[in-house]
Length: 267
Image (cartoon, rainbow, N blue to C red; front, side, top):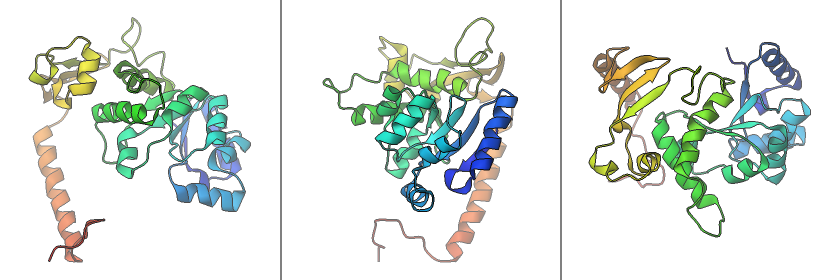
């Protein structure tokens, strides 16, 4: 169970306080989508006189149990509030890149916000998320020596320990230690794009592919072994998903052709 408020613009102070109180009573984390669009920020300023993080802060919603998704449109004041409160930022880097805007992750880190890499919508490949997060944060920084920060190991930490921290499970998840759950992946490191490799994490995140994962274990049980998913009939699910998708898409096309944004219709 993980309590959530959907959006700042649809949440009353009373709802926000109730969500946090429930989470604290049951020793849980809680979440919200935050500052993910310009219309959200404009709405809050117009109707409440403050930006979304300040609205949450006034309601007592910010804090180290909260992980806030996105935070793409935050200014210096927002970043300071989030940092002082220890709010965790759930960084959906691949989805943000699809939307054409990347949150100021370097500034949020510097302010004291823990970062957790996350998936969203049609970007469900966490490997892609780590690579996009690495490259976009490097581009956004104004370092004297560009490209040195962050490192691939930082991205892996955001995806593993950051994720465990976000869901209040850092004592059980996020690293391979005695007493924690045995969650791990097995990589095939002898593939052309992975050889040679001085640092395997760096080689994989810079050059690797999701298909390099040959086995995956969750809590000590293999859910994929030698690239075969063991928990479901993968081929039949893919076939059914394709069938349903084509049926829906054909219904959409019955209403007329779908123009591609930014491209003139070919004659």
